[in-house]
Length: 129
Image 1: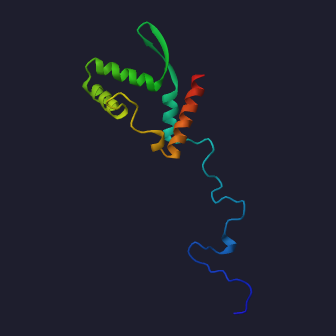
Image 2 (image 1 turned 45 degrees about the vertical axis):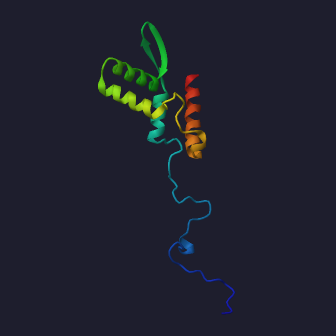
Image 3 (image 1 turned 90 degrees about the vertical axis):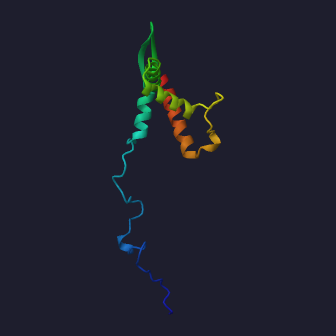
């Protein structure tokens, strides 16, 4: 063949040129809203929110997460066996036998996990102010 123009073969993954997306045009123009968050982010935000609690004769301002842990421990100390079981599971999962931090280190985390943790800590500091 002496034809200098290249022929374009239409097939799987090779749509006709006239039906392709135009340059600068999104294939999903409505897409995900910029402010949309997932369930994990909603839960993180809600647990990081600070509330007032009364402990003895003191008024404290703590995160909801901290308040949940305090309530769970109070139930366990009062003899609630289900609460005690949950506390023991948490202790076993989060605290090693010799009292050190959890066995996971920053080197064991991938970049996505580190980004999530940094974002959570940043929000937590913003909420504390």
